[in-house]
Length: 450
Image: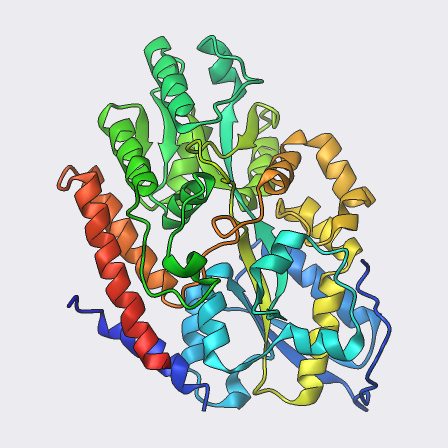
């Protein structure tokens, strides 16, 4: 039996104990309007400049009515925010709304401290037909829609068009598969166009995405969507092929190993040491802004769909985060939370959010509004993530894994990559060991909720 870190076990156990087309739908159930200003506290994890864009939405909401006042409080990363929520015993000190990544979906459902968004939708007859269908699918489990998606992201390939041209590669035909990445990297390095072909961040999320692109599952029971996951199955042939490709790229000097440092990975692209990097769409707007500040050509760095293994039924899984309503706050605060979430999800706000940050909108009609249309016209790179998401089939591999202790499992997976890349482990053996330990972590958690 693998010993799970006491901090992880305590975190999971504490959380379990806590459980003792336009969005203007017709009102079905009338609720009394609060008589005075109600402060609605929202914990978020958006550092600037995205944090400033979120603050603008909050300010616009506050100015649009006089019943509720949104108070945004930055809590650091998603994991920091989740841990603080878990460790806050008093309901008085908890927020009415918390923004958490997709990784927290199952653990928040298990917690029992949330009011599912479905409850507000049913009361109001709120129309979801204009929402991105994959976002609805991700946060809908057993027919209940739990959280309001807000900042949607996906992994994409960033690449240097100038380096491609220098190496004799067609910048309009970026690599689509892992083997094509390897071949392009070899040409880039051999030609001297760049020191490395690609900069790779050791990211468990990227591994999950590559697995989804191969059409393979991360956990059993349909990635936890046909029933609670009880076993990690990422040590499949598809998973082994991914970690082996990664190891060989680094060992052969074709890829720069940025370890877990996302900034370092992208900097190698910016300095010209690498001609490609895999990153989140969340980095798109700030990357373009920095290039402009440096008086560089923002069109030098293009984007393409994340290369992956050729797999039947494969595609990316939705990333990003959503807002959850905490049921331990007063009814007035929860209603205020709902009003704010509807406002933030409006097409106008989502179009501006997309333009400001690079996250893609939750609303389909937002794409046609001026802010979003202008961003895509000025920077064609914005269309990549949208096209990639729409091209992905809707199946268990692409819907995303539901796993309460996902962060702990990700940590073990990253450790496997680190051992392999250091030359201390065989890729297949280490991935199997990681899956075995992940299964024990999953089963240990499941015992706490049974």
